[in-house]
Amino acid sequence: MTATSGVLGRCAHCQTFLDLEPWQLNAMAMQESFNCIHCHKPLRLDCPEQIKRLKSLGSFATLRAMMIVLCATVLLVTLVLEWVGLLSLRQQLSISALMLGSCLLVLVVARRRQRRPLLLQGA
Image 1 (cartoon, rainbow, N blue to C red):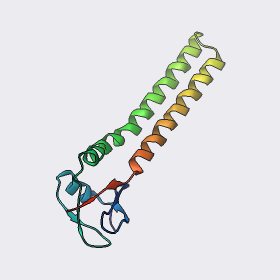
Image 2 (cartoon, rainbow, N blue to C red):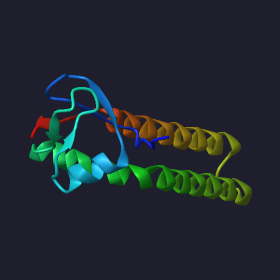
Image 3 (cartoon, rainbow, N blue to C red):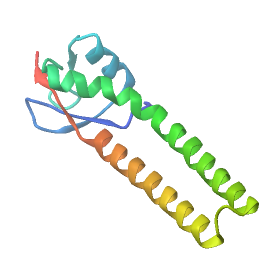
């Protein structure tokens, strides 16, 4: 059983999409070549823009946790403000709905960016 990372790569030789495994991501981070699963030709990540995208994938791992904490904090603050009487129930519900919607939007955009394939070059 192989563990996949959820990151896609596109082979330069056979143009197939590869679900990259963690060891392949490590090889790309160290700028080492590895073989394509389908055509068995060597691949590597050489383009500076693609290397930057690979390194930015690490920040997506903490994004979900940060958004959950931010959303919970805003919901608790609006609940307390409603209890104190500084906000009406309608305002509290609208702020809560806005926060939940923005949290979902950020997570959807991050997931889309993560699922964009990395363009691998021939080694």
